[in-house]
Image (cartoon, rainbow, N blue to C red):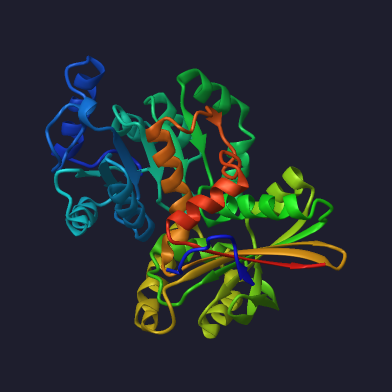
Length: 395
C-alpha cells in the first residue's frame, strides 16, 4: 500500500450518595436560577462558565475516557468534568491528567438519565466513553439534550447507534434545543464510514465492502471494552491481507453492516484481528456463551477477563489499524488508517467536540457519525493528528 499524499508518520441508578448528591443537586438548582454556572463537586477552578466552556465525560475514569480527556486538554481550551460511578476512580483519573485547573471529578450513575440532566447543566456537551453500551439507557442522549448540551459517544454497538440514528423524536427534540446528537464517533462506524465513502468516490460501482479492525495486544483493556468485544460474536475466521501482512480475522457485529448497506448500497462485513492469536481463539470460543449471561454476570466476567489480560499486555504492540476494502468484480480500492496507540477509538469523538466548540460543526439534531466531514477532510484531519493513511488499488 502507498501513503496517501502527504501521509504522516505512524507515529446507575441515582446520583452519588450522601453529601456529593446533595451538593450537585443544590448547585444545579442555583444554576437554573442563574446564580452560578458551574457544577464541580470535587476539585476544579471556581470561575464563571463564560471564561471556558465545559464538557462532561461520562466514563471519564476508563481507558477511553482518559484518552479522550487527554486529547481535549491538548487540542482545546475546554474545562472537563470527569464523571463515573465511583468517585475514587474519577479522582484518580483527574490526578493522572495533572491539569487541576481545568478538570474536576463527579460521581453519578448512568442508570438514571435524570441524574445526567442535572449533572450536564451548564456544559456544552456530554461525551459518553462509558460502556458497554449494551447496558446503557437509550434515554441518555435525550437527557443531555434536556440539559441544553450536545451528546457525542464512542459506541460501536449496532443496537445503540442504528436506533438512535432512526429516532425521529430525538432528532426533533435536539433540533428544537439547538443540540447535536452524534452516536458512534469511534473507529467504527464513524471512521470506517468515512473511509468507505472515500473508496466509493474512487470505485463508484462497488458492490461489496469489508471493514477490518486490528487491535494491538499491548492496548489497555477496560471491562467495558472487554464486554463490547465479547458481545461482537467472533466467528468464521478468514485470512485478510493488511499493510503488515496476512492475519486471521474474525467475523463480528458492527453498525457498518447496516449503515453501509443503506447509505451506500454495499454488502458489507466487519472483521476483527487480535494481534495475539490465542486471544482470538479464546474470544471466538467463549463468545457464543456470552449472550446467555445476565447483565450483572457479564459485568463481573468482563472485569475478571480485564484483570486476567493485563499480564499478557506486555507482548505485542500498542498500535491499531482500520482497513476498509471495496470491490466491484476484480476491481478493488483499499484504504487503511494506522496509529501507534489506541487513539483511533476516540479521535472521531475528539474531532467532533473540537469542531462543536469552534462553531464549525453546525448540524443539529441526530447527525450521522461519518457525514459531518467530507472524506477528504476526514483524512486530512487524521494526518494532522499523526495517523498514517495508506491506499491501494487493483484494476
